[in-house]
Amino acid sequence: MMNDKKPPSSPIKDRHCYRVSRLVSLSQDQSLSFGQMVYMQSHLMMCRNCRDFSKNIDKLGQMMKAYKNRKR
Amino acid sequence: MERAIDEQFVRTIYPTLIAFARTQLKDSTRAEDVVQNALMSAMQHQDKFQGQSAFKTWVFAILKNKIVDELRVCNKYVAVGDCFEDENDDLVLTTLFNESGAWHTDTEPTAFDNSWLMDHDDLESQEFWQVLETCLENLPAEQAKVFLMKEYMELDTDEICQQCGISSQNFYVLMHRARLRLQYCLKLHWFDDEI
Image 1 (cartoon, chains in turn green, yellow):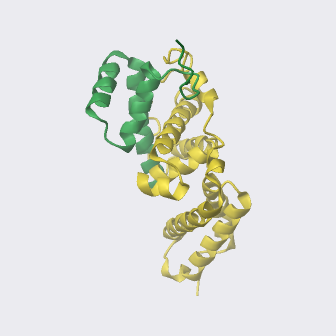
Image 2 (cartoon, chains in turn cyan, blue):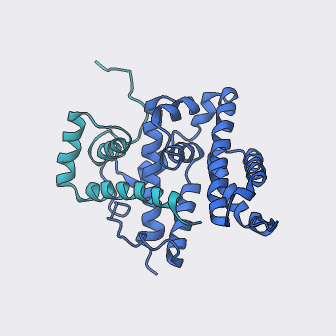
């Protein structure tokens, strides 16, 4: 039996690095649930690209602060 | 009385103000109006400011308030649908991730070094801010607006959602897309850029 209700159209399934990148971004804006935190942290331990992405996103926040406070 | 703020000075900061206003307001006529209003109110009180840098900071503060007002008024008239013309920017996703949701090897993130952290008067640091500004300007309008409201104006999520007439889910999607784009843009044009 087919379920004809399709998920929202996204070419990428909501998992792995893509999903972790969403959690990394979300964690900048609100605190993650316990489950989200475990999912993210366990992935970050194994995945160097996502660790780099996570650090880069932290730095992006610092850049925006420095940009705002820079001497004009 | 000697005035620190002359025509020459206004001419110098004008492009920066316009560029900032345009990232927030899609319509360039509205951006120009807002910048002119901000400059006019700033000029009226210019004698309170010693030196151009204090004045410039103050003009920016006024400009930000004017933009917030403008967005508030505008959102009464703009259909929510218009706010989301950029929501399906799948291209950035397919550039960064493969079908199983892993990073593509040629576009994967690599750790940013500290080359952006420099003395603020440093010439190279000026160049970095130009790269950052260009990356911000290249964001789709809605992403730029929401990202700057959060990271530059430091408004909280509820206020941003209210002013833009979006749900918190929309907000997180826009912030995620903006960060993916900015991270990739900075990697491409600054951190991986070998000169």
